[in-house]
Image 1 (cartoon, rainbow, N blue to C red):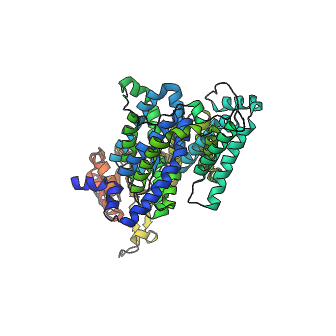
Image 2: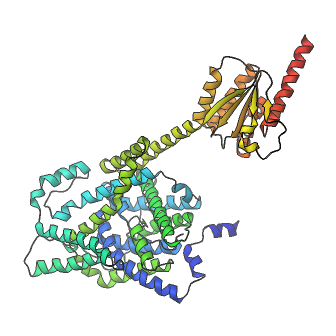
Length: 573
């Protein structure tokens, strides 16, 4: 048992080191250096956009990035702060403060740990795609809307938190646009977009950061241009290692922040496993989804104590790692150390980075997150898909992510149950059963292809799961029929499972049939369904001899009971 547990929860790093060599180390070293440099502007931008100081974004990239690479189930996953968290983190900070964010992050980490150890990694992957695209596109639009002020250098009062209200302020004060600031932002976007067409090895965001920082410095110092705000104008940059922080967990704070923590945990799980899956497709490796959740949980528990914010797997940085030759978690560990060295020795230089450049970086991030082509294609699909997509999208934009994910999941569940109910059929047969038309009997030597049914014997076939929706459908069909059979055979060979409501309805049917002196025989019951039946009162109600493994035994049992009934009637006569 212990060996099995260790095998199931072995970090990818330990597996990778078994065949590690000098060539792999140098490849990981070069990739780690590049990814570390790429992560710097993103960490700063995500930190500021989330409503915290830029160094908190960097601390998260260092600490969470190291833990996720060290403990994770993916060989190439790069962790840290991501654009997906901006909306939820900003909302928590605005409502509960930085300390409330720390509590919510720790709680989310605990949830992720529990998900991992309960092996829920595979389950998380089945969250409906329209929900994922809906809230991702909603987050992208929200991120874009938060960057308009810095992108155009607008002079406005404190921005409201609401999406529509924010745009109302933008329109009202758009005449305060600073064209030099807008030029820096637009040029930053252009550099980021054009760079990959020249070379994919050098990240466009880094080039934009360097070029625009130098340009802004020259414009302010020698050009006499004012109004170009930099990180140093808004924040005091701390280039030292963070101190341990106390996080006052209490029952009241847990109750208050539990919904926000659940949203962080779900979003972190979805994003990290989505990133790991994309990485698998690019590398040919297969990640351990449960161990990945454990690593995400550990990162989100530890990081807040060192001043960090929520973290998860970052698709863009993970793909940068892969494209630059990274093939083991060592590259992720190196990327964390590179960021640490940058903070310690070059951290003071970050104060010269113009806010407009970071706004440009985030606008590109928002565009890439939007998945607009997928969004448009999903709208063209079924009405239920469009409904789930648009509901999740609009709730994310207008309200918040917690409501959007919750309502989206509820809609998806109802949609799934509706389709499941429509795909499950109940049919009635009397007189005979033609086994020649049933594929499962083609390989069996059956002397008679047609099974003759005794008089007053009905066969009902259920095709699909016997759950609460189908149970009521079956009950309606049996009640609609006016004639009363003596024996009712219920074929369950195509029933993969039966839920508690299905069991209860079947139990009521059996009791009702018994009162009306109708014998119920169950046929084709698989092991899973049989186990569920044996935990109920149904075997006592109909008799365990009347639960048969196939239709031949069920019909033979019906013939025997019919013969016994006729014999009793003859004796009375």
